[in-house]
Image (cartoon, rainbow, N blue to C red):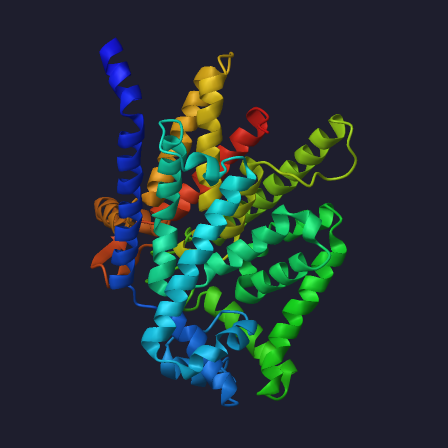
Length: 434
């Protein structure tokens, strides 16, 4: 045993360098596979909608978007302005731009979150055994299904996520830069902000939030340069979103295998109960955070929240209303940090809660592995469950993945989403983490 330990120490740099190389190759291979299989469906939505606006055509009329896509363009009107430069480029170039920007934004978001919670990559990039757990978890975050699914769809979720949390995590920059970052986040995808914006209000960052909202509105109103009667146009947009996400093309049914949100149960009453539960749990956590801050002798709502806090709020955001797997990029870095914090806690602490902490770490790691598992495997398992238990279709919506060739898919991912929220609530109220 002593000889083995000596060998491990002696060849630490070489072994760890090889491990780092393998992890980098794994990320590059997964990126290459994602690009090779990408459809860039949402990129077409973004650019074509911008092209219609540029030509003076309202893109939110069913007779317009149904002729091109067969589904409604749900992105914020501001995306038409942001996507308009790509109208003059080739489709291949458009795809490459969304792929590269989406990748860089996600990596920046992951590094931002890891650094913020003490896992500075400048320190952990050194080839040593101490660094490997952090790099391993970061690799899992960087090959997660939500991220790769976002790239395949040509979505903008990671752009919205990184802009959102640059603004949220660094209140010292509220005077100028955070106004732009938060406004851009809303302009990219306002739906990722549901449970984050109230926290800014509680933190008394009202001026920054209001100015960011004004910027968002200005970017949305920018389509008025090309279109007339903005009141009617925005009314059509709101109707388009409501109809599409409520028993429409973007609601639970035949093609909902990529969905993460509430609505997977056929009982609307139970779906509403789940939403009420999420809201009550959210309020309860906010009160707990506020109370804990007061017990420390500090006034108001804290500026610094834990990874568990943000992980919980991001999962709640995605689960509460219409979101697909690509929007899971919002919670992946926080889930990775939670795994690492629990890992460090289990190593350092030997108290009465040690066994419980190990169990919590195991669960967090299993949840991380779930989101790292290729979505095709999840759909395949869901299809097998659906075919084994056909009676469950009376309770939940089954779906079909025509591209992957899977039918009767049981909605595994929404159930996992709810399980993770319950798990994070357990973490939130079981013991404090800094």
